[in-house]
Amino acid sequence: MRTKLIITLFTLIVSLPTNVIGKDHSKKFHPGALWPDNKGIHINAHGGGILYYKRTYYWFGEYKSDTTSAAMVGVTCYSSKNLLDWTNRGVALSVSDDENSDIAKGCVLERPKVVYNQKTKKFVMWFHLELKGNGYSAARYGVATSNVVTGPYHFLCSGRVNPNVYPINFSKDDSISIRNQYSNLISLKWWTPEWYDAIKKGLFMFRDLPGGQMARDQTIFVDDDNKAYHIYSSEDNLTLQVAELSDDYTSHTGKYARIAPSNMNEAPAIFKKDGIYWMITSGCTGWDPNEARMFMARHIMGPWTQLPNPCIGAESKITFGGQSTYILRVEGKKNAYIFMADIWRPKHPSDARYIWLPIDFKAGRPVIQWRSEWQLDYLNK
Ligand code: DGJ
Image (cartoon, rainbow, N blue to C red):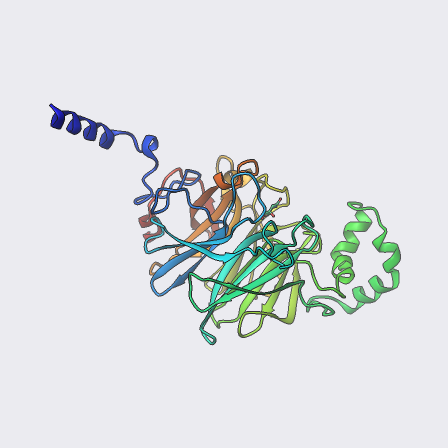
């Protein structure tokens, strides 16, 4: 009798639809669904990025608490061989209990990205840092390094980018005209045509020269020649910038360029295919989703050309409810890229969800279409 009951219960559980017992993430991606790790707990690695190292993928992201978006824990790390089943590897970078630390518990620590430096054999983590209690006014980058991929990472420094250095794509004429009219221009009313014109010409870049350029939403891209670049929202989120990193990937070289001035881009995610750089970004609407933008360039320092929204179909005007964070090149497959985005839940930050979708190419351009489930095999085509 007891055996019969157990068998009946077992049959019942096995036959339950997967959405009742949780999506089976070991076979398919389910964008927007809960994504359990090896312990059955929803992955907590938001605004993240992936590093492929020694035949394993490492996913680094923001640990989000249940009630606040501030960093109470730090950056978490998960590992996987197949991109579907993820093992929790713990906290890679911890926030500090020292109130005087730049990364004091309660700071804002967002969009961490880790790269491996072949020369120094170190893992280097870059992130967006806002000092505790100062809202989003610090607009700094942060750097941490480790000898071991999963960490612990040690905080190295934070700051603004390239103080007292002009970008390479800045005209001398604009520099002279901004300098001569600075006090008039800086008091212009925001969002007026004259103000936009001044922003485009570099008013805020010029304003920030002494202390360095603002750095908020960010990513790191390592090129085929192993040179690395920091791409970040700057100039009060009005303009993106791309800055070359030093050979050890821990500082800027001073070479940087402005991208899409006054266009208001956040959430840059970048990949390179057949010698062309593609970048997907979002507009600036806080935690709310908006329409993705796409840019292409033949040189990472630009010029960058804007193209239509790469997302197509229903909900494509709001990036399917998400915001870009990273574009992953899948190893061992040709032209296989995954678009990664976050569906933010500011009222319950730890419940934020992940959108991972394959990138298709139509007429040579990246296209992203919603799929409620898909398999990695799709990228074999
Ligand atoms: C949008 C950014 O992309 C996120 O990383 C975060 O900074 C939110 N804004 C905060 O409102």
